[in-house]
Length: 490
Image 1 (cartoon, helix red, strand yellow):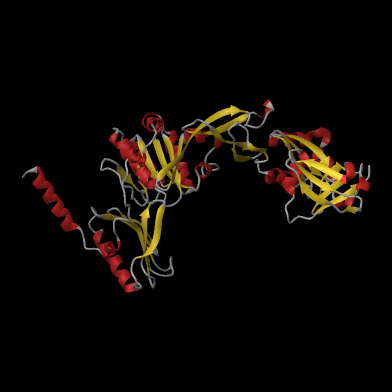
Image 2 (cartoon, rainbow, N blue to C red):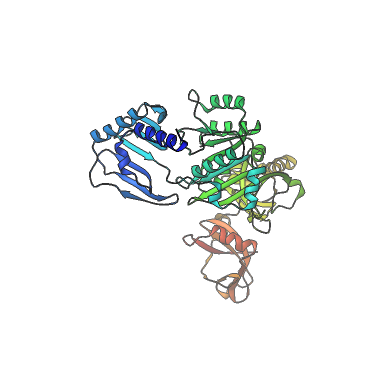
């Protein structure tokens, strides 16, 4: 028999094995998924990843008997293990992989009614289809061994993961996958593993004996998944993980707290963000010991994870420990934090101060220095004997701290001044009665002292927007706030 006749014969045999399934009538080449629910009309998502719409597939309402027929057809079809498998089976929920259709069937008690959701990939893409830069292709070929693919649901993450798996396989690498369900569209040379005896941890034990070059983990979601991903990477297995995240930074953030901060760059070296079916952003990670961007004092040096744009090498984010918290700080093109150290989660500083004072205030003087306002009675406890308490707080926060008495409205003279408010290009201008020229005015917002300033000629108070007072005004005063100006006697 010729090769052509043999191929045609095999095709006919395979076609004869394919059951006549009712749900297939709802699919066309543009249908990504169908949603069949009891007492509802059938719906489908049509389009491409990142660009699709939900449409009504039929005007007829689906009843339970019809959905049970579809369910029974699917269960009968997977009696042939070459066509499909049951991936997850729990009371009220069933997940089946039939050919390249991922089928989720839910019923009471898990869902209030019977529902069938079927997802089908509409396009298989190779890496060439993504038009990757030479630099990124070179990294995938030679260096990238801890890859994280992130993106929103339906953005095309799994499609890219399949493309990378096939690329590695075609490059002569041994490639395995961790999936539940096993729905990646990969070459026959790629072995697809699911949870062994209900756990990926058991799967990982077998994987280490198999010694693959790369493992595709679709998807990293549970806390134990992050640990398994990290453990496998640290043993030398190349890892590609898929994570749901709205931004690439959110994807990295999901590893913080689940593994030690210092080993994140050893686990992840390349983060790819997928949007609308294409690669939108690529980051690279590196660990350095340095003074964080925007800080100046050398004694603030610490381990810092640098997150840089892969194509331009531009530093965009830094991760480091601040106090007892691990934080991610954006960095601008000049290498300084975009709004200084004010990004360092002021509420975390305040949390440390509440044990000394019930109403503390924090003012950022420079990237490495803050001023703390507390009541007069709280200052001794905050300073501590021989300054020990404030020194420990400075060391813990990694900041130099100035302490000042927090003045409230109760401490101010009772005379309130009427004023007119205006702005110039560079200044905030308050105008009071000119008879108060030369006196000092105290600004109070919502019964809290803000700052004091001397009243100038003709009763005008000019506050430069870029001054400490101007920044404090912009930070703490909103349109709906009650701002008052009181006369303060020298």
